[in-house]
Length: 147
Image (spheres, rainbow, N blue to C red):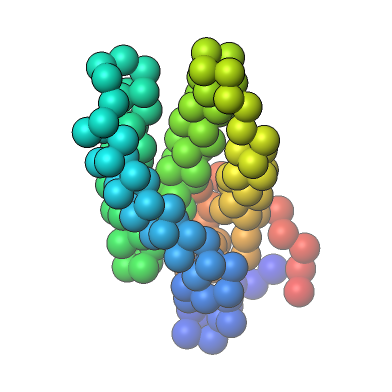
């Protein structure tokens, strides 16, 4: 398959699902920063405070990821993939803690976990990500059907 020049490639640009993902990272990061600052202030030292701190750090990292995505930085897909993977890990740990230690199951967290998986798969296989940033996260080669 021949490469289409970037200026003629309809997949180049932060549009469509890539724009939606960028907005979701931005909103989630903002909510994480705000929520963690409130939770950190009211939490006793221990796991709850650690979760609040991890949410704040993840929110700050998400802000950097958004800026990289919007600037079309070639490392943006790798950082976005890492952000979604870290978000998934924190979500799983937080949900397990809430369920096993505090006795508060969080069934809605399953949807958030699935959403993380969807965005991880999107980053790994999207033609738009490959065309806009030069490849999927980590530079792995992903087979795409010819157009």
